[in-house]
Length: 407
Image (cartoon, rainbow, N blue to C red; front, side):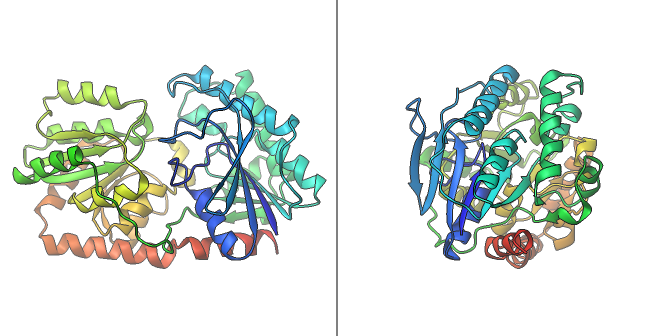
């Protein structure tokens, strides 16, 4: 079967996040299917972009055919720039001639819902099953997290596209476990909802590479000073609540607790300023982003990892952060600062939980984890790793996806 995947921000190990589409495609190819991913030529989530020719381009990556749609670059902090990027991608997908062949399945991934129009166009052209894959709820995210009005013309257009998707998709697959009722309120038929979380790639051979020497030196300096290192790897944005991590570090009188942040993003400079103002220069290191196969080396050099988000009613629908699976797979304990249902860290026993954006609780969690014996922390890490292997293997999730939508 030919599968067409419209996914604006889709990435790969070569380009960086977002990885989910790549890993699903890899498993489907192993099953004998062919996969084409239609993605934007520029996305702020990646650490490397495809070659920018200004024209539509194709690229074969590990058996997956990528179709790169030319779009303008933008500053991640610029709402206008991002909107222009989104609309350009959506317009060119809908009205342009794409080099895609007959398909049995067309998937529209909701990094935003606008590609649903192009997705339905091709599903009708080839008499293919149409699936709407929801990773984030748009435009609700912009309304509840971004503070935009429902009357905003861009929001109104996005809402129309989302409602259109729920009406016309054969199935809606979502990584959000509690989103079903919301989708039904927007027009989805109850029997069309399928929950499939983000997963972990457990089949590829381990090809871990060492961190750059400068990164290793900074981490080893903390280690030589006897520091307990709490680490984070990923995009550094406002939504990741890393400002709360710095506030909690200030509250902790135990100066042997340090933080290592690996990644880039729109709020790196803001955090550096905050760290300086709080007098944390000796207890925090900022490390430039590295390739995906270097991240395991980073995780092996820290004592525990942190994952958090802003406090928002938006997360009542649940979350499935891809980095959470990577952190748990590394076998290190976690501090989980997210207010959302289905707390897998608590369920698996992989670490400690606290309320989102609550520096006092986060400080206590940091102290508790540091004061545990090495054996107890290793036990937590092992439980988390075992849980991911049993519940988040992309081989299982990819099969479940096809079984659900092609039934």
